[in-house]
Length: 133
Image (cartoon, rainbow, N blue to C red; front, side):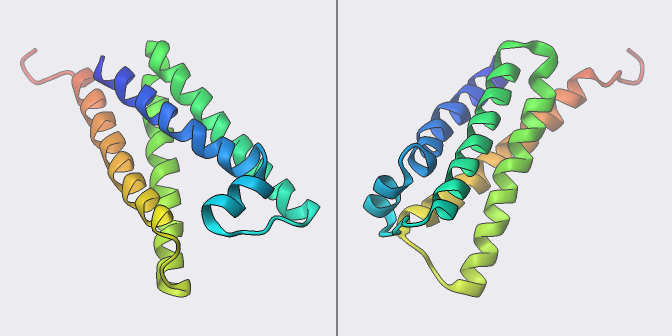
């Protein structure tokens, strides 16, 4: 049950972020971060990012509601969250500190990615036969 709850929480948290990046990037990115989306190429990239985020939400929900997909969904969540966090940390070092909300995203990605790793390890160890069992 805790795997399901975690995957649903991650899904619910990521869905609005996905939509803010790609549903109408010229409005939302300007409103949140002061980013002007004034080319087809940038709008295209942001909508592709939205598609990736929505795909991850779908995979996590699949894992939340299909027992055999729990493990793969937890791994995908860990890779996604920690991958984003790694890129953000690299940007902090190279580019400096961004908007405060992006720093919050980085912190959440580190925390949620770490929790996904812990939950996956727990799930795998629960299935491992114990000596003397």
